[in-house]
Amino acid sequence: MAIPPTPIRAIVLGGGISGLLAAWHLRRRGISAEVWEASAAPGGWAQTRSWPGPAGDPGRLERGPQSLRVSTGGALDHLLRELGLDLLPSGPRGPRWLGREGRRQASPATLPGLLRAPGLRLGEKLRMLAEPFVSSTPVPDESIQAFFARRLGEGFAREVLPALVAGVLAAPPERLGLDALSHLRQLEARGGLLLGGLRLGPERTLRPAGGTGALAEILARKLGSVSLERPARTLEPLADGRWRVLGEDCSAEAEVVVVALPSGPAADLLRAAAPEAATMLEAIPRLDLQVWHSRHAMVPGWERGFGLLIHPPEGRGLLGAVSMAADDPRGAPGLLQIRTYLGGAYPVAPGLDGWPGVFRELRRWLPELPEAVQVREEPCPGAFPLLEPGHGARAARLIESLPPGLHWLGADRFGPGIPDLAAGVEAWADAVGRTSASSGSI
Ligand SMILES: Cc1cc2nc3c(=O)[nH]c(=O)nc-3n(C[C@H](O)[C@H](O)[C@H](O)COP(=O)(O)OP(=O)(O)OC[C@H]3O[C@@H](n4cnc5c(N)ncnc54)[C@H](O)[C@@H]3O)c2cc1C
Image (cartoon, rainbow, N blue to C red; front, side):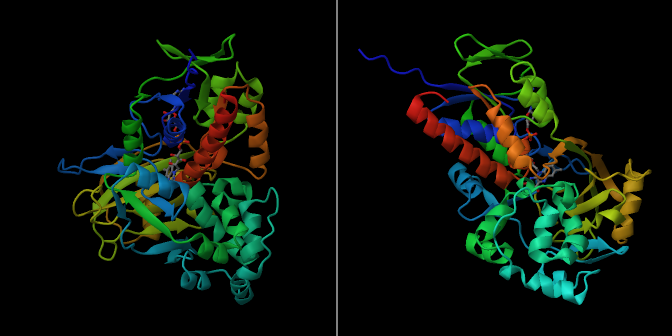
């Protein structure tokens, strides 16, 4: 009688979105996977937390994304459909501003706002309109700054880009490579920012009912094999080629271990088993953010929420602020709920390390903002990886240096955006599925 092959068994370390998606995709390819998560909840940064209103009424805050950018037909779109997550449109959005020259101005994220952007000369505005005619041949190891200077001109890259990038990645565009925003490459491959955007199809901004954290919650529930409060402490190779993972008072063995952790804890775990990979992981900088959540009396005109990005040299470390719409079920009824963030790769000025200083600085840009009725700090140490130009080649070397059976995933590999993580983890799982089908191991 033929002995059925032993199913491949994987342990995924880290129950953030990357780890949960890794286990989800492995399962769909017939590989059983359990997840070890160090903290008491799944989701990592992508968690929705309870924050009751001033009268004790229910309210929540988002630790990470407040909404998800979903491209029709992309990996995240497929996943959300498959999970059957209840999704709400982000709704009509309120004003978007750029803080520049000491006051707020119309956001340059729209064409009229872009053409009115301060600091741009007429020739620089006309240069932006020539973007569809710029060659779409990619330039290796380009920084985000060089990419935009090439496509939209030096004026845009100098005057507008720094605030847009600081608001999303908390770092200057000259220090970041395209791996930090990998959809820019896809756009260029399809003809550029404008033509590529048209060809890639519409993007929607969606929020799961119940908050962005619902994505991790539903993945964890459907997987059913996510162990919380189970930090991995040590990784040991076994004589038969498998791996042993040791926790605080538990251990498990598996054919495959997927390390879906931020670079620091990933390096600690891999130091003995894969020292070269650990050294390369340590070299990926992580940026700390100061994040403040605050609730205020509603300001007329801001009922649909707002977004403010600040030109970094003027922000003194304050990168921006974003508010939820007044009818957002996550907020406290009748109040304006704002998230303000500082730091990342930018030095925070003295006096901005506590709410009174942060509020004074916010009021410089939002003079109408009344005193907060509730404030909560959510520190975000190591929130974002700083993926420098040339990151792709370094990541490829890191992956090559891993011994058989060890895999590495996460924001340090694919970039911090959830859509990029979804696409990256799916492509990784496809490759793993092909290897396991042809060789029986991965
Ligand atoms: C303030 C903020 C705003 C953001 N806004 C957006 C946005 O608008 N749009 C967007 O797309 N993205 C946004 N992001 C980025 C996005 O949330 C993250 O990049 C993404 O969630 C990272 O997922 P991950 O699984 O790779 O890592 P993480 O979320 O860091 O998950 C790693 C997990 O590993 C666990 N862990 C650590 N050590 C161990 C161990 N030894 N053993 C077991 N488990 C361990 C941690 O507890 C954690 O749960 C934002 C992030 C922040 C912080």
